[in-house]
Amino acid sequence: MQSEDLVPTSKRSRPPVVAVTGAASGLGRAFLAKVASSADFRRVVAIDEQRGDVPDVTWRVIDVRDPLLANRISDIDVLVHLAGDYALDADPAERRAYNLRAAQTVLTASAAARVRRVVLVTSAMVYGAVPDNPVPLPEGSEVAAEPDTGMVGDHLEIEALARRSLRSHPGLDVTVVRPAAVVGPGIDSVVTRHFEAPRLLTVKGCNPRWQFCHVDDLVSVLEMAALGTVSGVVAVGGEGWLEQEQVEEISGLRRLELPAGLTFGTAQRLHRLGVTPAPATDLHYVVYPWVVDCATLREIGWKPMWTNEAAFEQLLELRGGRHARNERPRSTREGAG
Image (cartoon, rainbow, N blue to C red; front, side):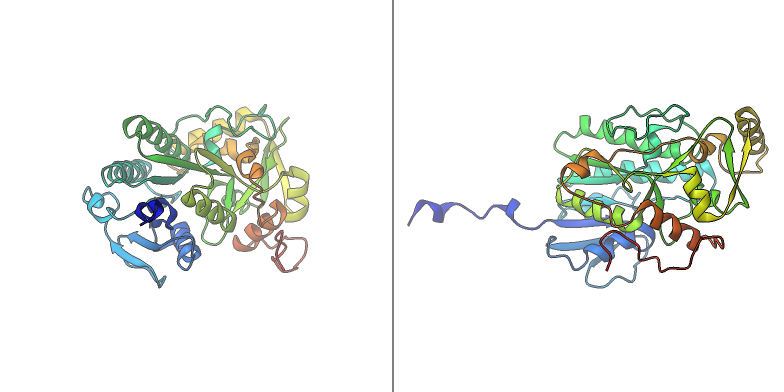
């Protein structure tokens, strides 16, 4: 018997088993549909409170906040956590409680079950949006967003949980994906709602730049993160950005320019009165730049399928925008046939 016959087959050479939380709808379903038939994964496990409609995967019905989650993922190599409450109109305290409990349970259960890697999605919003941000922001820039009661505050708290998990569970690899403003079917955000208004709010003396991340591109990066092609903190978005003038030309919408004090003071008063669900700080993300340089992805040769312009045009179409400059098909994605 030769010596090589005694060497067992390396487990690492086998395709990993991947699980996805929030698999029945939204981004979770989009990711699940992408990887369900992929040969890069040995098996795909879908986790949600209810069974979804994607076939050829193993469904496990459980609340992601359940401490018994560890027992249901003991055979998992990689977990992509996409279960979350992203409703702008949700009660902020209830939404945050759900999102933090879900992320904490996933991280703790994964460490207990000896899952090798967890992939989390937050947002490039954690860099903060201020008038003097460099365009683009380096991927390694400081996390400088203001903690608030909105979605940005949730993302900041989830990233803090991820950092603590790396210290508490050194054997668990945690990858954090930070997309630019996400665009695609079913996406409802501060940015998409901005373009439902009859005029585009701007602040005097400031010129926003616009960068989008289509769901298709986000899903492709999540797949790479699940396979370990990228790790650590990864920013994802379209190449470059659109100037405000380009956004106005494409949408046919005109700007409404107001002083910063009036804009944010009024928004804060409306929020305190309960008229608007979002804190005034959310407005920063539609009047100040937060474009990110996707250096990690660029260095490995990844390119987005969707240009910022094509993603923005689909945003307008999905949000009922009637002012798009033409009616050409929205297949103007880079690399689309």
